[in-house]
Image 1 (cartoon, helix red, strand yellow):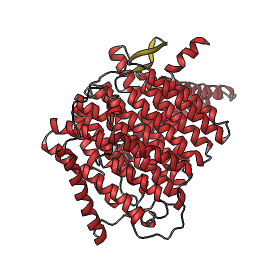
Image 2 (tube, rainbow, N blue to C red):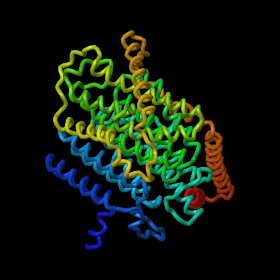
Image 3 (tube, rainbow, N blue to C red):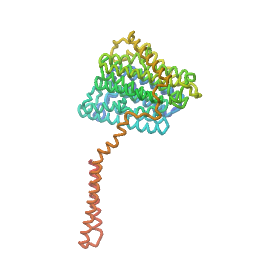
Image 4 (cartoon, rainbow, N blue to C red):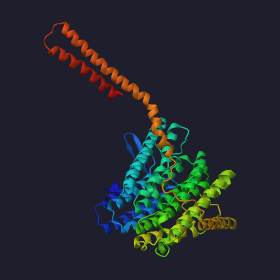
Length: 568
């Protein structure tokens, strides 16, 4: 018992999972207090863990590293706890017992995965995040959310299967499962790379994100935005830092949502496109792999989890009070939901990296690393992607709060939601004004100065210029019209063409199998008929021999089929 208690600080993620299970049987108010207490204890335990391996066990001859902290583990673990706590506070006005507990289990599994030192331990928690998070999508409680949840679960399980397959190949090659730097040009490395790529929402693999997140419950979307994709970013940083192809993958991720943002009218789906854009910047930093770039990846992940949660909180409050997140049905909410508007604006400023916001203090590191190491084409594309953020943020704020009044009779968000949004907004402003505490958590020493006149003037002038152009086009009615249907997702290509392609590939095998079955059946029938004829010519009057021979032949054939099924 004493040994178990001494290990608990090293199993903080598992403790949070257990806390989420216990929360299922607690009354609402006690449940919220209980979860906040468990999160606080887990965060404190994680804060005490130094870099190194701290807890291992042996399973069937395989060493499992249950707790290993790297240079980037602590900042990820800290912000995961912050996101979990904000979600508990935000959801205090809702009495969704299963969703609240699932969110805590989801957070605990993600935190435990951060400390996994081997791929088998990682696989266990990787799948736990999938099963816990799908409940949050189902909590959308609609036919669309059910379909999205089933697709989401299938994709997440596919990622897990690839992770386990890659781990098995790695073990076969090296005799170890330790999480370490990998080469994507080996079969094991490529398989693990693909497993992480799915969860990181790489191009052509990101349809599940845009499909599932907008269908989740109002609180569920917030916690979904924090863990799954950022856990994948964490694993890419550990295993594939410096892999140059990631630079171009990240560029595509950052710029590909441009047209979708322009025509999208659902606020939550719009935020998923922004989430994909932000992930692109992090992937670029991982591909560069320099000390400055990796600092930028960690800092940007930390800040983005908070300001994206803030933006999803704002849209969740709007959904609760108006019953819709359709921009065309909103407008004029500034007078009716002024605090929600204020917090949403802070989140929007942060995602655009406006000076004195958290995005400015963190994304600047990645932008500087790109400028130092990449071609002018990459720099230009990254600046284009940054301009898109301004467009999207203005669209979110102006259309929702300052557009034509929708005449909806709405109230301000409930107090728990406002408290959570206020805390997230304070963090966004605090990091922007005084980033030193966050910088102290980064894996490498910061030698880059962000508070330069040229940097400040460029960010302010570019943001204001794009903003003025947007307002001019908006007032003139020259912005692209919103689509009434969900735009084609990037995975349309393989969901559209994969089924006929698979059918074409497998058809020869199917025809051959059916032909073999038909041939075998006809051969058995012919054999039985020949035996019957033989019996008739032999003048054997009793049917016992005939029946016995037929039964024996059938039994032999069935035995052969079963044997083939067993061994093949």
